[in-house]
Image 1 (spheres, one colour):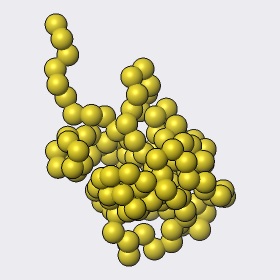
Image 2: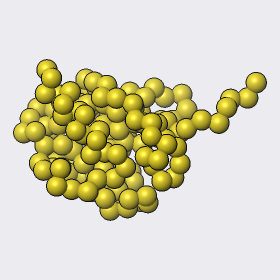
Image 3: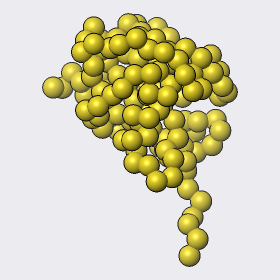
Image 4: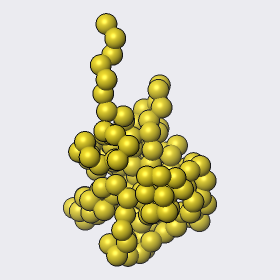
Length: 138
């Protein structure tokens, strides 16, 4: 029996440093080219979602993460203009954030203090707010 057509599986990572800043990239390609976004991307065949999350952060921002904590699953069919994607979002806390270096399909990567003042791609503002609430519940 062939597999059914399903949404694409993605992952996003909210990373806070010891100063409360969040790591954001600037998208290098459409959709939302030039906009701020969380590091993340598509899960590859044979890869766990957690491994994809770590790989995407490393590829897009040159930062290694561990201790991933599930923020939630985001499945609104309209969240990505390219088509229906489902994202599994994680939270990671880094005491010393390191120096991000844009790579892969990111045009830039940086630590941002006031992310609320920025227009973010996709539903990333909601994901960061959910992660911040989760972080605050500790």
